[in-house]
Length: 391
Image (cartoon, rainbow, N blue to C red; front, top):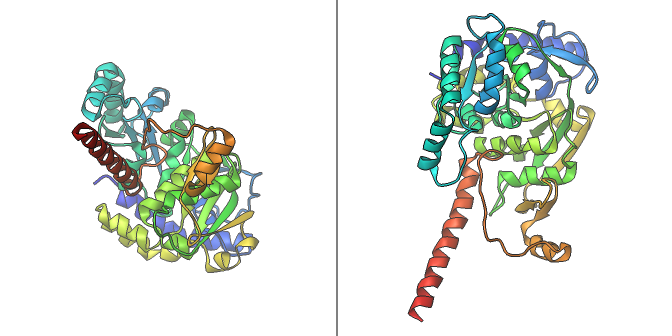
C-alpha cells in the first residue's frame, strides 16, 4: 500500500474542530483553501486570523515528494540533521534525469548508465531513512503522486514546481526548494506567506474538442504569467464538478505557468471515482466521512466576490480549444483564430516537428487526444506516399 491511511485518518480527525475554530475566528464562511491552510497550522491553533499576502505562517505539511535532480542535495542536507527516519511520509522519484531522445527503452538504459552513481545514492539513502523510492522508469513524479499519494484536503510540498498537479485531488500541494523539504522531513515547521485567494467559477460543460487543458490556457491568458503570484487559485461551480479527476490535475499542474502558489478543487464525485479506480477505497471512504469540510462553504460559492481577492468566471459552453504561445505561456489564442493571428504576427505557418511532453500536463486523458491527431497525421502521410508511388 503506497498511501498511509493512518496518517490520512489522523488529518481528517482534526478537520472538524480546526475548521470550526477558523470559521469562528475569521467570522465568516471559509473557502476550501482556507480550510486546508487552517487545518495544517504548525501549532494547531486555528483561532488566529492571518492577513492574506502579508502574514508569514508556519505550517505542518503531510507529505514530501522529491525528484532525482533536486533530491540529491536535499538528502545530503537531511543526512546532517542526525535523524534516523524522516518525520513525515516522503518519496523520491527518479524521472528528471531520463532524457527523451531515442525511445523509452533506450533512453531509460542510457539514463541508468550515465547516472548510476546518483541513482544508487538516492536508493540507498531512501532505504536508510524510510523514504519511498520510485526507480527509473516508474513514471513521472506528478502522475505517480496523483495515482498513489494525493488525497483530498491534504497539504504536501515537493521539490518541483509542478507538485501543484496534486491539486486535482483537492490538495494544497506546493513546489519548493530542497531546503524547505529538508526542514519538513526533519520535523520542523514550514513557513509560507499566507496566500491571497483567486476564485475561478466554472459554469456550463465541456463539449467537442474542448478539454480541461483549455480552461487553464484561458485562465493564463487572463491572469498572465505573473497573475497568480502569492495566490492559491480555487476552482468551483457546476463546471468544475463536471470535470474528470485527471482533467482537474491538468488544470492545477499548468497553474504553475501563471505563477500561482498552487491551485485546487473541492472534493466531489469525480475525485471519489478516481480514488477508487486507483485502488484507494479506504481514502475515498475516509474523505466521504468529512465531505462537507473538503470543499468551500456553500455561502462562499454563492457570493464569491465577498470571499476571494479576485474572481474570474468562465462558461465552459462557450470555451474553445486554445493554443498558448509562442514565446510565452500566457499568450492564449483560440485554435480557430491561430492561422490568421500567425499571419498577422509573422509567425511560422508550417509545423515540422512537435514534442508532446508529460511534465506540465501528464494527463493520459489529454495526451490521448494528441496521440489520436498524430496517428491520423501519420496515416494521412502514409496514404499520400503510397498514392505518389502508384502515380
